[in-house]
Amino acid sequence: MTDGDLDAAANAIRRGELVVYPTETVYGLGADALNEAAVERVFEVKRRKRDDPLSLAVPSAEAAMEYVRVDGRVREFMAAFLPGPVTVVCEKTPAVPDVLTGGRDRVGVRVPDHDVALALLERVAPITATSANVSGRPSATSVEDLDDEIVASVAAIVDGGETPGGGSTVVDPDRGTIHRRGPLAGEIEAWLAGRP
Image: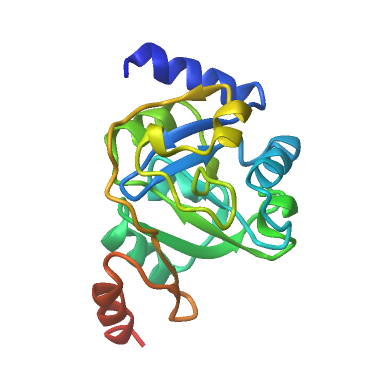
Protein backbone atom coordinates (compact mmCIF):
# COMPACT_ATOMS: atom_id res chain seq x y z
CA MET A 1 0.00 0.00 0.00
CA THR A 2 1.51 3.30 -1.15
CA ASP A 3 0.63 7.00 -1.19
CA GLY A 4 -0.36 6.41 -4.80
CA ASP A 5 -2.89 3.76 -3.69
CA LEU A 6 -4.37 6.21 -1.19
CA ASP A 7 -4.50 9.00 -3.77
CA ALA A 8 -6.25 6.68 -6.24
CA ALA A 9 -8.81 5.65 -3.59
CA ALA A 10 -9.43 9.29 -2.60
CA ASN A 11 -9.92 10.26 -6.25
CA ALA A 12 -12.38 7.39 -6.73
CA ILE A 13 -14.40 8.63 -3.75
CA ARG A 14 -14.41 12.16 -5.16
CA ARG A 15 -15.80 10.72 -8.42
CA GLY A 16 -18.69 9.14 -6.49
CA GLU A 17 -17.25 5.63 -6.57
CA LEU A 18 -16.87 3.14 -3.71
CA VAL A 19 -13.67 1.93 -2.08
CA VAL A 20 -12.69 -0.57 0.60
CA TYR A 21 -10.40 0.64 3.39
CA PRO A 22 -9.03 -0.85 6.63
CA THR A 23 -9.94 0.34 10.14
CA GLU A 24 -8.94 -0.70 13.64
CA THR A 25 -11.94 -3.09 13.69
CA VAL A 26 -12.83 -4.44 10.21
CA TYR A 27 -12.57 -3.34 6.57
CA GLY A 28 -14.94 -0.50 5.72
CA LEU A 29 -16.89 0.43 2.60
CA GLY A 30 -16.19 4.07 1.81
CA ALA A 31 -18.06 6.54 -0.38
CA ASP A 32 -18.54 10.30 -0.28
CA ALA A 33 -20.93 10.60 2.69
CA LEU A 34 -22.38 13.87 1.31
CA ASN A 35 -23.07 12.46 -2.18
CA GLU A 36 -26.60 11.00 -2.13
CA ALA A 37 -26.07 8.80 -5.20
CA ALA A 38 -22.84 7.37 -3.74
CA VAL A 39 -24.53 6.67 -0.39
CA GLU A 40 -27.43 4.96 -2.21
CA ARG A 41 -24.86 2.76 -3.95
CA VAL A 42 -23.43 1.69 -0.56
CA PHE A 43 -26.90 0.57 0.57
CA GLU A 44 -27.41 -1.23 -2.74
CA VAL A 45 -24.05 -3.05 -2.71
CA LYS A 46 -24.45 -4.10 0.93
CA ARG A 47 -28.13 -5.01 0.35
CA ARG A 48 -28.82 -2.98 3.48
CA LYS A 49 -32.24 -1.62 4.43
CA ARG A 50 -32.52 2.12 3.73
CA ASP A 51 -33.81 2.80 7.25
CA ASP A 52 -30.66 1.27 8.80
CA PRO A 53 -28.42 4.37 8.98
CA LEU A 54 -24.80 4.62 7.93
CA SER A 55 -22.14 6.48 9.89
CA LEU A 56 -19.58 8.89 8.53
CA ALA A 57 -15.82 8.88 9.08
CA VAL A 58 -13.61 11.95 9.45
CA PRO A 59 -9.90 12.41 10.24
CA SER A 60 -10.47 14.10 13.63
CA ALA A 61 -13.18 15.07 16.11
CA GLU A 62 -12.58 18.69 15.08
CA ALA A 63 -13.27 17.81 11.44
CA ALA A 64 -16.65 16.37 12.49
CA MET A 65 -17.86 19.78 13.72
CA GLU A 66 -18.75 20.77 10.17
CA TYR A 67 -21.34 17.97 10.07
CA VAL A 68 -22.69 17.72 13.63
CA ARG A 69 -23.96 19.96 16.42
CA VAL A 70 -22.50 19.03 19.79
CA ASP A 71 -22.39 20.45 23.28
CA GLY A 72 -19.51 20.45 25.75
CA ARG A 73 -20.30 16.96 27.06
CA VAL A 74 -20.11 15.39 23.60
CA ARG A 75 -16.91 17.30 22.76
CA GLU A 76 -15.41 16.04 26.03
CA PHE A 77 -16.46 12.48 25.15
CA MET A 78 -14.92 12.76 21.67
CA ALA A 79 -11.68 14.10 23.15
CA ALA A 80 -11.56 11.11 25.51
CA PHE A 81 -12.39 8.32 23.02
CA LEU A 82 -11.51 9.46 19.48
CA PRO A 83 -9.69 8.31 17.49
CA GLY A 84 -10.78 4.84 18.51
CA PRO A 85 -13.20 1.95 17.87
CA VAL A 86 -16.19 4.10 18.85
CA THR A 87 -19.10 5.51 16.84
CA VAL A 88 -20.40 8.71 18.45
CA VAL A 89 -24.06 9.47 17.68
CA CYS A 90 -24.65 13.24 17.37
CA GLU A 91 -27.22 15.68 16.03
CA LYS A 92 -26.50 16.19 12.32
CA THR A 93 -26.35 19.47 10.44
CA PRO A 94 -28.22 20.03 7.15
CA ALA A 95 -24.93 19.25 5.33
CA VAL A 96 -25.53 15.54 6.06
CA PRO A 97 -28.03 14.02 3.61
CA ASP A 98 -31.08 12.23 5.00
CA VAL A 99 -30.27 9.17 2.86
CA LEU A 100 -27.21 8.54 5.07
CA THR A 101 -29.22 8.61 8.32
CA GLY A 102 -32.43 6.94 7.17
CA GLY A 103 -34.18 10.29 7.68
CA ARG A 104 -33.10 10.57 11.31
CA ASP A 105 -31.78 13.81 12.80
CA ARG A 106 -28.71 12.08 14.26
CA VAL A 107 -25.62 10.60 12.64
CA GLY A 108 -22.84 8.32 13.83
CA VAL A 109 -19.31 9.75 13.67
CA ARG A 110 -16.16 7.60 13.39
CA VAL A 111 -12.53 8.65 13.69
CA PRO A 112 -10.74 5.32 13.13
CA ASP A 113 -7.57 4.68 15.12
CA HIS A 114 -5.81 3.28 12.06
CA ASP A 115 -2.97 5.01 10.20
CA VAL A 116 -4.14 3.94 6.74
CA ALA A 117 -7.76 4.96 7.35
CA LEU A 118 -6.64 8.32 8.73
CA ALA A 119 -4.30 8.87 5.76
CA LEU A 120 -7.26 8.30 3.42
CA LEU A 121 -9.49 10.59 5.49
CA GLU A 122 -6.87 13.34 5.41
CA ARG A 123 -7.23 13.20 1.62
CA VAL A 124 -11.04 12.99 1.44
CA ALA A 125 -13.78 13.22 4.08
CA PRO A 126 -16.38 12.60 5.25
CA ILE A 127 -16.77 9.10 3.87
CA THR A 128 -19.21 6.36 4.81
CA ALA A 129 -18.18 4.19 7.75
CA THR A 130 -19.81 0.80 7.43
CA SER A 131 -18.39 -2.71 7.21
CA ALA A 132 -17.38 -3.85 3.71
CA ASN A 133 -19.68 -6.86 3.54
CA VAL A 134 -23.09 -7.86 2.26
CA SER A 135 -25.52 -7.38 5.16
CA GLY A 136 -25.89 -10.52 7.26
CA ARG A 137 -22.53 -11.94 6.20
CA PRO A 138 -19.36 -11.85 8.33
CA SER A 139 -17.30 -8.65 8.31
CA ALA A 140 -13.96 -8.78 6.49
CA THR A 141 -10.75 -8.59 8.52
CA SER A 142 -8.52 -8.93 5.43
CA VAL A 143 -8.93 -8.23 1.72
CA GLU A 144 -9.02 -12.01 1.14
CA ASP A 145 -12.24 -12.16 3.23
CA LEU A 146 -14.14 -9.64 1.09
CA ASP A 147 -17.37 -10.81 -0.56
CA ASP A 148 -17.03 -11.19 -4.34
CA GLU A 149 -19.96 -8.76 -4.81
CA ILE A 150 -18.12 -6.10 -2.81
CA VAL A 151 -14.88 -6.59 -4.77
CA ALA A 152 -16.80 -6.30 -8.06
CA SER A 153 -18.55 -3.09 -6.94
CA VAL A 154 -15.62 -0.96 -5.77
CA ALA A 155 -13.12 1.16 -7.70
CA ALA A 156 -10.25 0.60 -5.25
CA ILE A 157 -9.24 -1.64 -2.36
CA VAL A 158 -6.73 -0.20 0.12
CA ASP A 159 -4.94 -3.17 1.69
CA GLY A 160 -3.87 -2.49 5.26
CA GLY A 161 -3.21 -6.12 6.17
CA GLU A 162 -5.15 -8.08 8.79
CA THR A 163 -7.47 -6.10 11.10
CA PRO A 164 -8.55 -7.21 14.60
CA GLY A 165 -12.25 -7.66 13.82
CA GLY A 166 -15.28 -6.79 15.92
CA GLY A 167 -17.48 -3.74 15.61
CA SER A 168 -17.16 -0.29 17.11
CA THR A 169 -19.02 0.62 20.28
CA VAL A 170 -21.95 2.83 19.27
CA VAL A 171 -22.75 5.47 21.88
CA ASP A 172 -24.93 8.58 22.18
CA PRO A 173 -23.13 10.56 24.90
CA ASP A 174 -25.83 13.26 24.81
CA ARG A 175 -28.44 10.73 25.91
CA GLY A 176 -26.07 8.51 27.88
CA THR A 177 -26.97 5.48 25.74
CA ILE A 178 -24.77 2.68 24.43
CA HIS A 179 -26.53 1.30 21.34
CA ARG A 180 -23.98 -1.45 20.60
CA ARG A 181 -21.30 -2.79 22.89
CA GLY A 182 -17.82 -3.34 21.52
CA PRO A 183 -14.28 -2.28 22.41
CA LEU A 184 -13.98 0.17 25.34
CA ALA A 185 -17.65 -0.38 26.33
CA GLY A 186 -16.69 -0.71 30.01
CA GLU A 187 -14.65 2.51 30.01
CA ILE A 188 -17.42 4.31 28.10
CA GLU A 189 -20.00 3.15 30.64
CA ALA A 190 -17.81 4.42 33.48
CA TRP A 191 -17.30 7.75 31.68
CA LEU A 192 -21.04 8.19 31.16
CA ALA A 193 -21.81 7.24 34.77
CA GLY A 194 -19.31 9.78 36.03
CA ARG A 195 -20.98 12.59 34.08
CA PRO A 196 -24.74 12.37 34.71
